[in-house]
Amino acid sequence: MGEITNLETSELMRNLNENEIKLFLDCFKENTFSTGDYVFKEGDEGDRLYIVNSGMVTLKRWVMLGDIEKALLTAESGCVFGDISFIDRSGRSASAYVEQDSVILDLTRSDFDSFYEKNPAAGLKVLDNLLNIVATRLRATNKAYLDAVQHDLQISGGHHLNFQHLITYSMKIEIELVSGKNMSGTIIQVEQSNAGYEVIVNDNKGNLVMIPYHAIASITFDADS
Image (cartoon, rainbow, N blue to C red; front, side, top):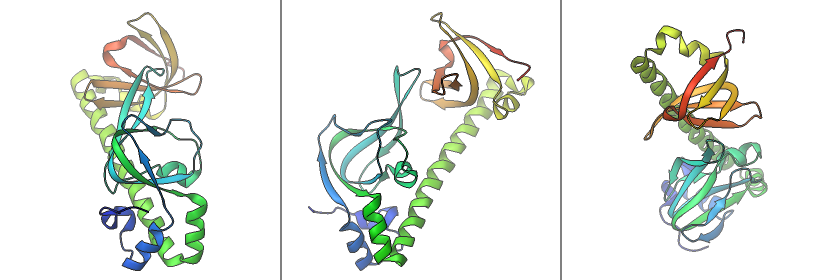
């Protein structure tokens, strides 16, 4: 493996001693990516955990029926990504796009399991660190969601409609877009982004669709749902 740059300070290494860090990093494989490459794409199968050694990777997800990619996380040196699929072995929930030439280390779940079996104390520390990383990101996402909903209710007067109640109970809706298209599903949340406010809907095909307010002509709520 080539030169490691400051990975000892990564959150994934927290509370590991020098020897444990060396043993753990020996389980990783080093890969080089060029600007414009994808480490993986949304929907890909995978059970690898990644750490950026150098460079920059952006985690993105397709929204608006696959027309727009929304940036979820920018990963730089020491940052971990790919954690969800590593934990539950499910398909990738986002794409990892290389913004700058990068050196990235990856760890398969089977290699981690072997490390854990041989070094249970260190393995437990790593798992605890990984759960803390996931929990921190989840808390940040929840806060952004709640802030967006509360702000939206204030500026739109939606509190008079008890909009938070509608979101909580996933009321069925019909949406007419300014383009003339129509879609139906259940509302999941309201989110704030640099482009403004967006409604996230689970459509009738099970897809998550993000629709900016300016693209909506009307919304009809199903009062019986």
